[in-house]
Image 1 (cartoon, rainbow, N blue to C red):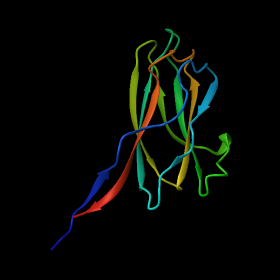
Image 2 (cartoon, helix red, strand yellow; image 1 turned 90 degrees about the vertical axis):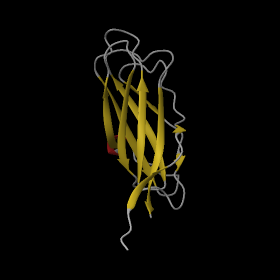
Image 3 (cartoon, rainbow, N blue to C red; image 1 turned 135 degrees about the horizontal axis):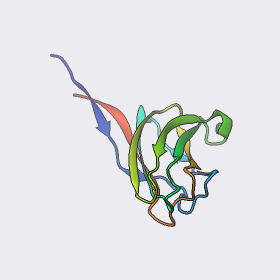
Length: 135
C-alpha cells in the first residue's frame, strides 16, 4: 500500500523582536529560537508590518542567522535573506515566507529600508514549524 507524505504544521509562535518604531536604515534582531531536536524541515514566517508615514514605501528585508550550538551565529553580512516586505505607506502589510531550516537555532533580523520608521505599534513576526507527516 502506498503511503502519503504531507506537511505537518506546528504551533504558531511569536518571535521575540522589537520592531515598533524601528528607524529607517536600522535593523532589529530577535532572541534565539530553539527549533528542537528533531527539528522541522522549514519555517513558515509571517511578517505584519505597519508604516508610520506616507514615506514608508520601500522595503523591509527579513534575514535568518543560523547556529548549530546557540553561540556562534552568522554575522549580518552573511545572513540568509528570507524575503522582502514591500511597504505601502501607513497601511499595515502582511507577508508570509517559507524558509528552509539550516540549523537547530535561528535569530531573525529585520532591516528597515522603507523610507521612514515603522509605526509605534502593530509590528510583529511569527513562525510555524513545518515538518513531514507520513501516513
